[in-house]
Length: 256
Length: 256
Image (cartoon, rainbow over all chains, first blue to last red; front, side):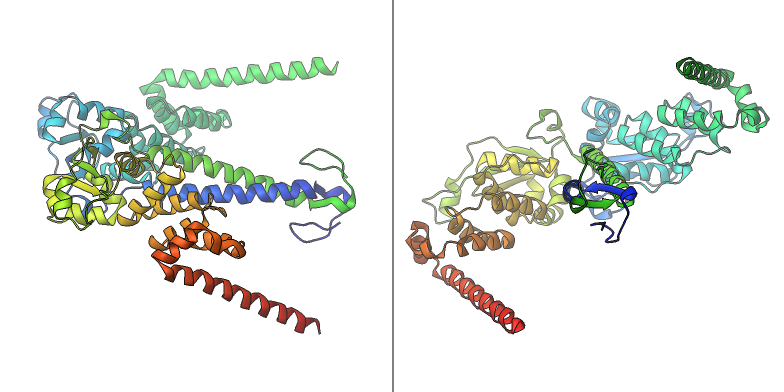
């Protein structure tokens, strides 16, 4: 027989579909491609020029965001440390309507009579200027140039300001980078920031190398710092073993 | 043989594809669907709450748009007629950043020292309140509920303010509604508003009913109002006849 797709001959045992299904599938593929085209064009329309990239849209900005990097010597609870943490980088301009529509936290801040709403100035703590720029840029474009560090920093910010879409975007990126070397670090990070899918992905990698787990430096650090998380790794491991054993039992009894 | 897609048997003459191509096509379909999912999620993120629908986002608006419906008794050239055309409908609130990013005409108006930029009030002439609301809503959501009249009115506005995406959206909708009854009207409309694809679509429908063209009321009106457009219909018709004849000649000579 002759394949309508690759235009080559094939034998009966290599047969795939009948002609009708092939035609239908081709039509479906065309339809899906048209839909993608249409969605891309709508995306292009809805995407806004970010004032972090396009200075021309900055004049109409009604907000200024200041990045206040974390200060290791500060207690982290405001007070004296806070006063000392003045920004030495330029402010990042933005529009209230954009930030309020992307983040319920900004919305509450800007639509109520809070200091930030009156002054039009928002301080974003524990973040570098570059991360803040990337964060604001994402609010306008739904795009970000990520590496592992940037994805982690943006995920933290996205969680804080409840920008779910950005959090999921960063989480997917980090998941694609999880390996034996960094699984413990990502596991602890995912725990801290309620990133469920990253937690599962890193746990799954950890399960594959349990025999060497306790030798790792990051493991020892985690035992020191947050032993409950280590307990959860062992619980998950045990759980999996029990389930696997139960599965085998069922297999055996069904065979009997 | 057995079709992997519809799970039914088929004969050799109904064969579609080999197994390898079928697997590949299924994978492609899955990938396309994932891409659509991803694009939809980004669209959902970028879509903004329109102040025409969501009063909560109106407080931060920095623009008011007034619909000034067309006045049949006015000369249409401003002056006395213009003064009489005061709006009796509420203003439509909007944000400078959104309008400026969607329309180069609004951008020029708002970023230069024009009266509209200073006052924050823009009069939109020859448009009803409902059309203006739909227009502003589209700027935020890339969505509009269309019927033929709304699509035509929005197309006119989209052309005036150079909102290409909306113009194409309306044009596609109108094209889907072109038939023998309305082809002349849509042809003249497409001409007036440089809607190329609609022009071609309506011309194509007209070509199919040339024998009854001259009997139509809209035809007679068009001859009165804009005879050059009628000439263009005949030119297109003649052109097509010549091309068809040339095609036949080529067919005949190649057969000889």
